[in-house]
Image (cartoon, rainbow, N blue to C red; front, side):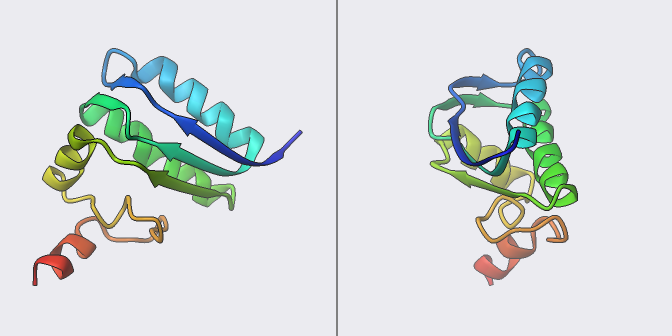
Length: 109
């Protein structure tokens, strides 16, 4: 049964050490809800494995025609997203077709 909106907070680390379990949990949430908002304000550590999970969720949301938004980005989250050039990809109006880094380049111009 699919429900409307869900706001989920990720706390602690989103890294290679938690990626497997986090992937399963987040995909299950996406399957059950039409709109999933992920609050990233309590993420204390984010590495590329964790970032891959977030990119996967964005892609899956697009495939399923569901809405996925990110809110409350912590300092570690912002730092890695900027380092990888994915600022535009994680903006609220981003869609799977967004070219990573395009928003960052425009913002710096």
